[in-house]
Structure formats: C-alpha cells, structure tokens
Length: 109
Length: 114
View 1 (tube, rainbow over the protein chains, first blue to last red):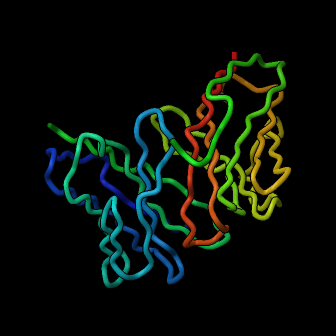
View 2 (spheres, rainbow over the protein chains, first blue to last red):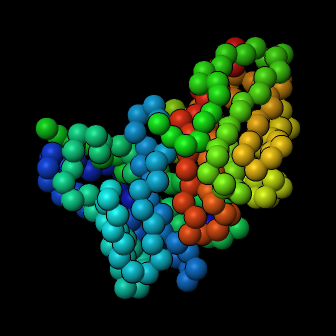
C-alpha cells in the first residue's frame, strides 16, 4: 500500500477550526483516502473517506487536492473530545489498511 | 459504544496457557480483521478474512491462530505466547474487503502475558 506522511503533532484551541494535512504523493488512481482517529483507551474510529471529490459528513470535511497527492481533514469547530491521534490511510481493494504514525491533536480549552 | 464487540476486555495469561479472544459484529459485514497495537504505536495488521476465508496473514507466528466460524464471528486462539506479545488486540469489520468500505473497530482486548 502507498504511504502517507503526517505531522507528528498539532495543537488547536477549542471552538476553532482544525486543518490536519496528509501527503500521499505515491497514491494510485484506485486508492481511497481514509481518515480514522483513536481516542485514549479506545479502538480507532472511522471519520471520513473519499476518492477524488471533497466530502462532508457530520464529523468532519475532507478536502482532496486536484492531483490527489495530498488531502486535509477539517474539523470545523474543535472540542476537547476531538483530542486524539488522527490517521490518514490509503486503502486499496483487496489490500491492507496500513496505519502510519498519525498526528496527535491536542485541543486547548 | 461500538458495533463491534470484543471479549474479554482484559486478559492475563501465562506462557503455557491457551486462551481465545472473541469478536462479534451483526452489521452484515463480510470482511473482518485482527490488528495488534503496542503502547504508543499505530495498529499493525495481523489477519484479514473475507467471506470467512483467510485472505491475508501478515507472517504472524503460529502461536496466534485465527478462526472465522461464520460471518458474524471472529476468534483469535492464543497458545504458548511470549511476554512481548502483550498488547492491545483490535478486531475490525467492513462491509466488503474493498477500498471504499470503512473499517469499524472494537475497543480491543488488552492482553498481558506473564
């Protein structure tokens, strides 16, 4: 599976938007971009996924670059409960879902 | 609460014991996964089942033996483990083993091998 690169950590203030970047320069045409987050003492939680177009759901928005070599997860108003490790992953059919190191998001009150 | 249920939540076992981890989902998903996660590390894939058939084994030692008796149930049988096998074991499922199928994770079994 193609690899992704994320910053090790980011900080935000409560009720402010957060933009979490992910680089995936070796993405192939059929790779979907998935985002998961993991809160302490819990399993990873699915956040959002997309192929080419920007995507919105109740949790977040996913902005995908036109060349698909990067993407950004957008949390519109961070809360303390959004503090977690965020993983950006490329998923292929019949392939592995391989986690990278992720971004540790700290949210300040 | 997650829709993937893992039992037990915690397990302590000796190196000569035999134990099993259980994972259950009732979402009609046909792909199921086992991951292992050490402290402060990302989850690492161990096994993938698709339609109850083992599709990926990531060169996992034979002391870990997966089983998928039906589409809702996934087991991980443990035998003669080592202390370094202590970790959080995560089960996940997805509708299909396909790129656009998101994974749903359980909260894991925290295993300690003494």
